[in-house]
View 1 (tube, rainbow, N blue to C red):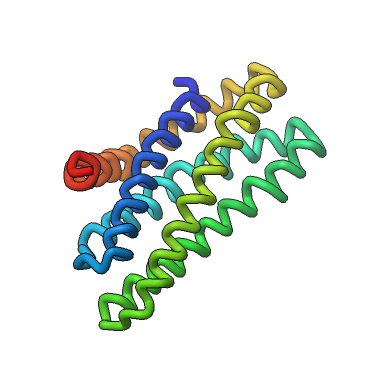
View 2: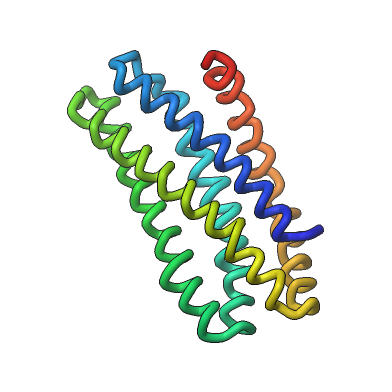
Length: 185
């Protein structure tokens, strides 16, 4: 298993979900009925797959090794760039979730917060994914010693085995929502 290749593939899945989030927010903007169940599924995918599954591997495995073995440049890029963006994404999702609950409870004005936080999250993640794919991962592959990359791969295999059920459930959610929203566009 090439852990970085797996993380690139996860980025593709996350990007697919970002398209669905955008489509559903546009429906809210057009004052169509809010499908709360589908928004809950989007949030579940984002929290479980994008954050707990994907970001956890980046933070605890890849970024950790980069900081330990590549020094100052890696530390700056990881701590003041990637980790800050992960935290900002978590804030958007927390506020997105809160806004969804407010809309469910009849607060029409909270549709603004729902759209604002969901779209802000999609914009952040689109840029974040691009940076990681084009710069951060390539830097790690180029600069980390092969023994460290092998360790990253081993730890990711172990992580994947322990968390395969989350991945499978999340991909099922993604494919279900794609059938519902992407095919109708």
